[in-house]
Image 1 (tube, rainbow, N blue to C red):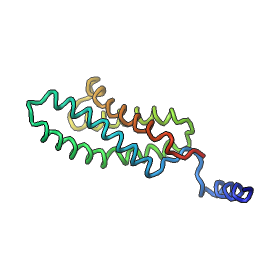
Image 2: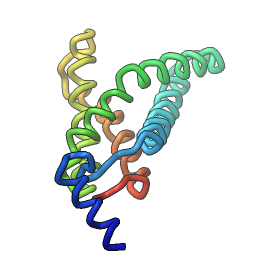
Image 3: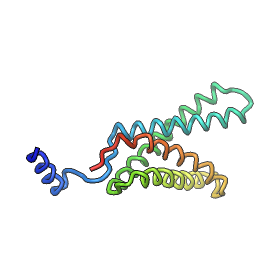
Length: 146
């Protein structure tokens, strides 16, 4: 047992063993899947309530574009955010960051795409941040804390 802790200490000093909160690949994927599914269910509910039918086609469009955009933008954003937050051991700060960063990132991206910089647009993108915070909260026990 002493030999293992000595090796772990040596690895930590050499930089091979990282300290902090480590978001593993499976945890990242699980968080992404929960976040995306949660947000797309809410989006579909709003769009279905305000559309004039075509619910099946609308659902396929939401799934295709929603998971695609989330995979291209949301997954890398979560991975980068997880790496930046690695030294922060308080996981509540992780959950808060997973709310704030996606909200502001998607607000900026949406504003550049023409949705505007209004508070209504910020409230829309806060739903993305809320889903991301719930996704991060869902993987709380799946991360390694060293």
